[in-house]
Image (cartoon, rainbow over all chains, first blue to last red; front, side, top):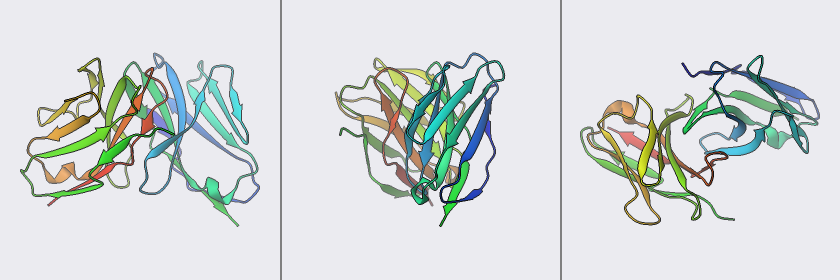
Length: 108
Length: 112
């Protein structure tokens, strides 16, 4: 069974805060991992791929722990524009499984 | 910047009717996908398509669904006899190397 789990939130944080999301996946055969963001009634947009060594893109840091089968996303110095739903995506061959998403609201 | 486009943006149909949703993937991409998202729920994989054939499909993608790449640019999803529960947002996505996907803006399908 291929499942991806996320805390649905919402996470309500003040501007400038650091916030972290976790995601767990059930199938150890998974190959690739991604974080997407989705604004209300819009399409998912790729935020970043997640590599085994971890990767950083500006205020965003992603980590992968294959042994424990979880992926994390850290957002530093959060902005109002970061308010969205963050989707964890795991790839098995040609099948991409989406988590239910974690909703973030950054408050002024 | 190249992008995936989808038409129509909103389709309203009667139960039992056939609908065709259209997508134009990014031109040098090789892998194409359809997803659906029922309002308030998660994005669900329907089907992937590569080299002019289906490479994988989910249990949602039953005999009522079909996909086609009729020419070098379009990628379509057909639902033969729509049901009320087919009402959802349908997203098309494409990727060059089966990794980072780029999504179209979606077609909202409403079945009455």
